[in-house]
Length: 282
Image (cartoon, rainbow, N blue to C red; front, side, top):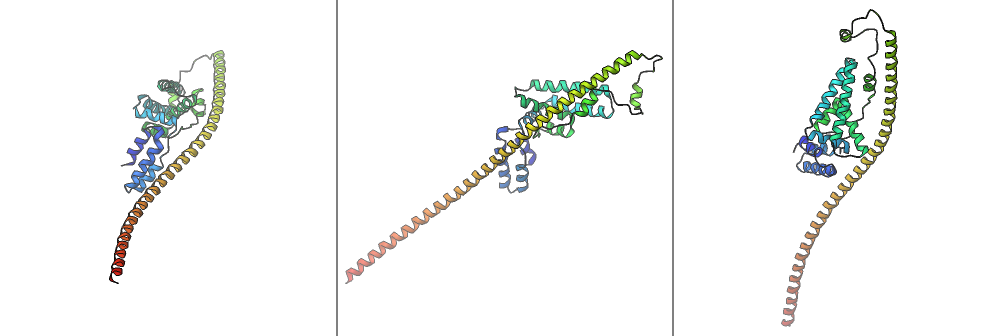
């Protein structure tokens, strides 16, 4: 028995049987004399429903999940290079890919759908989350701050006084005459787009805050009920062991009683025979 094999079986198995399977694996490891392995197994957290669904994609060797993780690396590279056009295109690709993955999943409740969507977004945004997802070891919905993606996706890179060499290479040649009306129109359009992005970002922040509150309550309930279930399971196991020990003691006591009774009967018969012999000798 090794840790990776046990973890793979637990996170790839039935979510409803996770706790009992984990406890059984930890008990088996302890019985084999590997207390450290038993402790590591016991500390494995039960995944949420949304995390289990994404783990299932990894178990099915989903090409789309790998594509999403690779797209995240491209997004971070474009962000680093302040490549506004490329970042906007990659952001659109990310949204389309997430929607396509969700569309191909079985029917889910609205809450679970939102949590799966948030987890998929986190796979594209956070390398550690992507690594856990590809390994099929996610335990909960990973929340990411999407502010940087929305702000960069909806506007051009800010002017800093020094233009990047890559941006200079891509710049168009200077025009002899400036179209002021066109520039003003483009500025208005950019300002409207920034306002729209800010409004959308604010809406998403509020929605995320509400979801965080709901998730926090649900997670507290989950931890409380899981702990209660674990304690109850441990109590049942302890009572079973005590019952087995009590039954064993009862069997030993019964055997000792039968032996003592047989010895008593034998001694009683011998005493009666001795008394009769003594009476006859008088």
